[in-house]
Image (cartoon, rainbow, N blue to C red; front, side, top):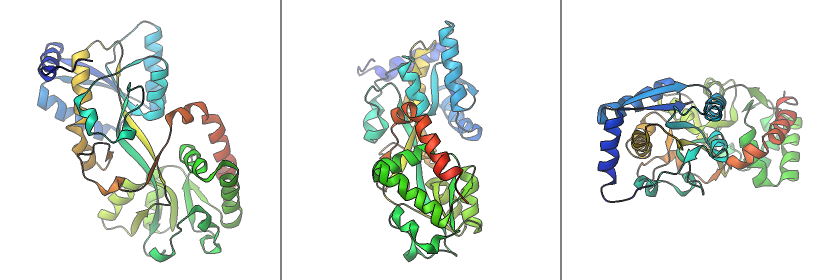
Length: 316
């Protein structure tokens, strides 16, 4: 919580005495290796890592805490899971000077975790099979018969669905998607990377839920793919939080600061969408609606069931 002029020196001196920290994370291994190597090179402080799915990260952190075991310093994972840890009073606010550089939506009202990067759901199309001028401007445009048998969607995007439906109005939005599925069908595929590749290959001419960084990545490699947005784009923050009982508090604060500062341009190079306003990218220059982690936690069952009923089971 310290904010004095000598904050950086105090944090660094304390972190060097501690010599290490432990991070629980769900970040992909190859990405994680890059950030941790840069941190270790800059500060000479060892980053120990335990990696698993976001659900398992939360499970382990809370199981250990309830047993009175406090090994972990930093948790880096998806927004809804960090929000769950906040509710369990597991996290600690960090008054980092770098918070001022972040987009407002990256900072939670309670400030106990912060978004370091975004997953932005966008639409994508195969540029050889779909002309730019025929792209849908609204979800209602997908009722046009020309889209019959040409649409794809990812199998588990209930959080995207909740965001879109709340924007359209629940009754109207749910009926619209029922009508789209009944009239034109949706090819349901598991995995955003797979879905994006299927658009690039032409198997699916237009997909409704891809991460825009992945489409941009394939386009830059010469694939016949382009992403666009039926506004607003739905965005989900992933982020970082410091454990309330971190055994290496100075090293934890140093790592937290690092993820909000040095790591931001590195995130962009790794094709993530950073939350710092100091990093220039066209990936976040679209109207964004942020998934509310509280909604995902409290209404997860409702939206998963609706998504499965309307999209998963009915699609063809």
